[in-house]
View 1 (cartoon, one colour):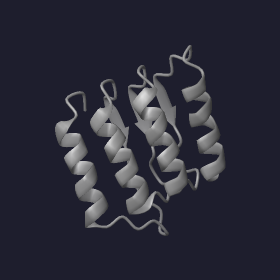
View 2 (cartoon, helix red, strand yellow):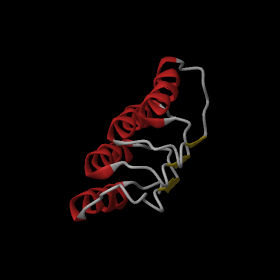
View 3 (cartoon, one colour):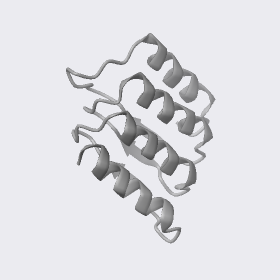
View 4 (cartoon, helix red, strand yellow):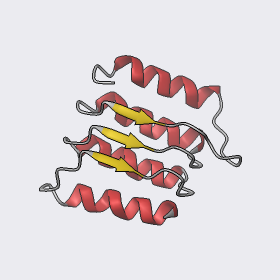
Length: 109
C-alpha cells in the first residue's frame, strides 16, 4: 500500500463517520512517516478503533512521534502493535521516548 494507500484508507475512515472500524492492520506495507501522519489524524477521530497494527513499516521518528501524539488523545485504542521495524526504518531514542510517554498517559492501552 505504501504511504498513498494507507493515507487513502485513513482519509476514507475520517470522511465517513458511519464507519465503525474496530481494527486496522496496515503492517508490512512499506508505510513511512506520511502514512503515519495520516494514521495519526484518523486515530484522533476514529472513536471505535480499538486495535491498530503498524508493525514492519518504515515510520521513523517523525512517524512514531505523530502516532504517539494521537495515541495520547485516543480514548478507545486498546492494542497498538509496532513490532519488527524494517531494516530501513530508523527509530531513535527520541521516537521511542515519545511513544512510551504516549502509552503512559493513555488509560486504555
